Length: 622
Image (cartoon, rainbow, N blue to C red; front, side):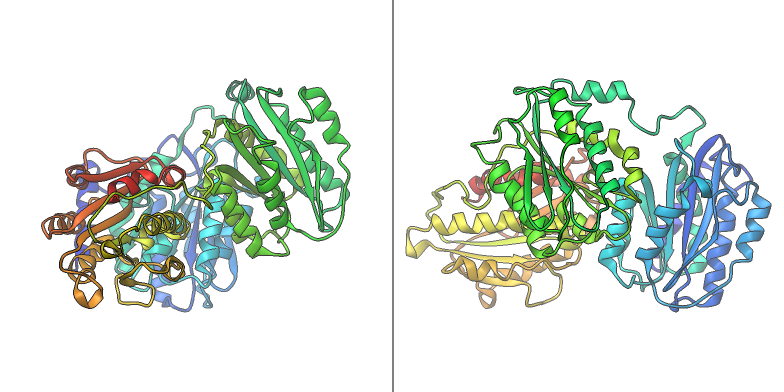
């Protein structure tokens, strides 16, 4: 029996421990709208497709089906998306199971991104039976790579920002785990499932049902939007400098531009406006940049709201990147913005910028400067990848998308709350790191290790930004040519041009140019590779140099026995380990206990703290 099948047999045993498979409904008296997104691509045989259908039929036995409680819809996809039935269509199990058995197998590509977008934007609409105030769940079942994995991750992230819980179920060896994790809600060990083949889907039925039931609402009153008094409480007296960045390009009609202005007024109405409280500025953009309201322009709300009403409508291109550059260099400059309050920019657009690369660069620079960026996409012409580039991390907290300008009212209160509850980040310029002098008088061989597969592309970029600054500082601290530092980086589990062996740090730019973000393999395997190979003479290691391994990992890490073993083996191999975790740690984890026993252990609350306070790490290295 394979390890994977053994793993799921254990899950099944645990499920039986709490509840045998009977006719009972664990989700009785629970409310949810659940949409199944089923793969019907060419990689699936018709018999396997029918196994999917049987799995869904069995799964709904565990739900109390009907409008007062759980409603279910089904979408199939290949190159196209096929809505099989909507949430409102079947209100009892028997008719629903019959409808599922009538779903026909089609073949084509694997456009998972389109399917998630359709499920998110269409299946939960009122006209299709979607309800306010109940949990929304999407369950994706697939056995292959999607055609556009990045778009798939973005569509799933946007779904989560809309309050939708995402489950991903991978079937067979053709599925890429990193893509399953990118689709699913967090923590991924709760919302990602994998089985060997379609006949094994039954192994996860109880476990999936239990998790889904935990996420749905009981039949008690639910407030779909933040209560207005709660919004005003959180925003009361909040000191912040806030920029609204409004698209006024030719793709927007005058009536829709006015709806943007009304949306801004609705949010501003929740703020305490004043010179020592919240200050608001507005910039519009098209071919040019138009700062229509400055931070110090209005010290009282009435005049500010009246001024917003008079903002003129423009036409032209969509120079988002240049506008973000203006916000960074002028809007939040020390001469204009207060440096001891939170800095926020809310970017609204309904199209693609004329220079996506510049938009990405400027958004990254703003975030590194400590500015929180909200990205709001309007309509279906928005580039979701670009929205994700603009938005701060995590996407589900800072990225929003609505169908049209009328739908802006549905997110105004949640935007106000999120704006009022973000924490102040000390402004740190990432372009000019604070000078720091290493007092280490011994030659050092330093390997940076990060599991880019586990932490994802965005966090990989953020970690590499920190490594960039560390390399610059280590080079500046090099005073004795006999005690120089060798530096390498390991991100992949197989030999690749992306892995950089130890080499003399003569030209940091040459080293830094090799730090491309690539998906890696498991962290335990990477640490093993580093321990066995990275410090050998053939890879640039020196017999008398101090060996240092700086290992970055997400705090939300699984309790992996192999990882724990590799950490222990490395600690016994005369290699000084510095473990850097980001996020909330699990104090009862054996891995956590192992890491805390190390002299070099650091935990950062989030990646923003890692970016702004990396000198803590530099002190340990030095």
